[in-house]
Length: 405
Image (cartoon, rainbow, N blue to C red; front, side, top):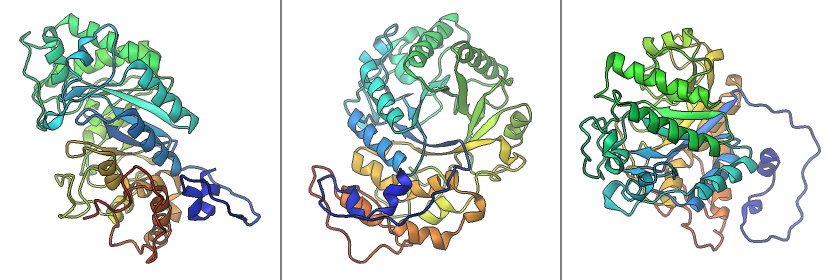
């Protein structure tokens, strides 16, 4: 259906009824994806985004045949998913965000609405509960989970690596089992993401012991564990998936985990992280992994990117969008587009069809569609956008290019 949609004129994207006659040439569409997992991640923990904003992101994913939405639901700055057995997680831990805003959280009904809306568009929601680090909001709510049993102050900054739940306390594992159990019950998809990154104060065997125990909790819930590639040293559990976010394709620890049976979702920070700036003057975003223009987002191969990992071990590709500097739907769209279609094409099309010149011309044709739909996007200078733009539809949403650098 998305292929048919792309064959129709840009007016098909109008939010208002259009009276026109459109004809398509007869033919056959022969098409199938290269990778089974094609996704994007939205961080709703650093800044909270309303359900309607998340649904609009779902629409963007569906438009380019992505089939997974990874929601980063918990972090130091806020806890975003209701857990009945631990109500203070949202009542206390959900009231903060980066910069001191009001935060917010999803009720179970809100989350179910997102899951259902995504499913109707053939998109599977992958919830992430980040453990054992990135947990300050949980510790503020429940200091019994902290190593010193003292509640830390709420955190609204952007540093990482300072917080962790107590891996030596059995109460921690009660907490993990309760939270993951309730989230799993709300999530029909097979995946539970347990984070695992930047737990700098939980090291060595203590870290791997914690991960191995949490992996078993996930398996006992009938779900497949996903985690950032820092999980790699832990013992393998059947089906487990590592999400690789490095910036250097040489990673012997991850390669060893793949040899033991792990599969990879590939999300290199210097190609797929959509919170990176396009150029030095991009008004929002970061540059710790480098600047990522559209060509850099497109010119790499998920199947060969991590040295020593065979293509058959790559489950797919995902484009994460962290939101430390992202505060609105317009910000989200500015960073997603036009790079999201680049990542989508890497996940869908065979490597033999990879061609920058062809892609940039086809991508340029999406500009009038976004304009017609009232979607904000970055008018990347390397793309030959049409010189006569479609007149934007009148809607109460940010219009195209309002935040273009």
